[in-house]
Length: 302
Image (cartoon, rainbow, N blue to C red):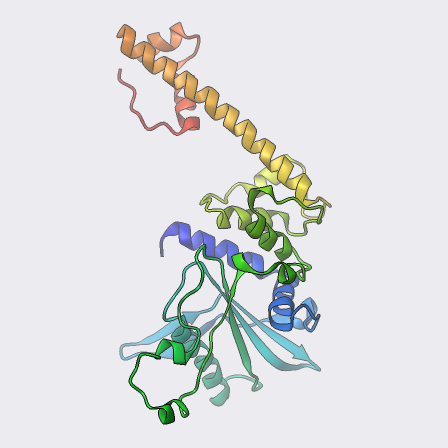
């Protein structure tokens, strides 16, 4: 997995892992908005299972695992996977992962026995067209109808987060509502909803918008004197972030002009970098900083 994709996966995982967001996702997508699951009734579970291959033991990882407790007993396990690309064999991965959990219960490695619900949050730009059931996955096999009757029709539950209908999006109560509305409405999205997880939300939107660099968000919030406990709406936060983008754009524009003028002077007048900078009222250090700001990779011809 490349670094960009890995960072995006981490951002998605961290956002969904907040207890209020996890409970909200489960309630909306599985229970049509009914508040079946409370944030404080969900407990973290292992995101790793082990299976034995011909060579050695291998690990399988899921993004999020939560137990639902009632009266001190595990009632259910929820497994949530984030996907940015369609995966034709995702169903087989699910079979391996849930199978490993049931095997641990069979072998007595778990205190209780309980059912498992696994579902996928798909964030990709295109629609999910891969098979969602055993019948779809192996539908081209030459099997008799009688044989299909004895094949367990395992299903993959995929929710296409960029294409959720408005009536579904409106059921979210956590910051997930902001994310799915932003994905549906784009750059023109504005809302007076209050944000709970500010840094995580900005990182999530940046990652889903294709921005690789999600570092520095916490520092920016600190510069703006915005704490996680402070009340701020989507409009207020987005406006401040847009102003930051405009300010950086102006800086890049000024830097670009300085680099262009210095290099034109060097080329037209056949002078050194130092002489060109001096003639334009700047320094070599100022020129190098400008090149760094505008991302120029052109080597100075000295």
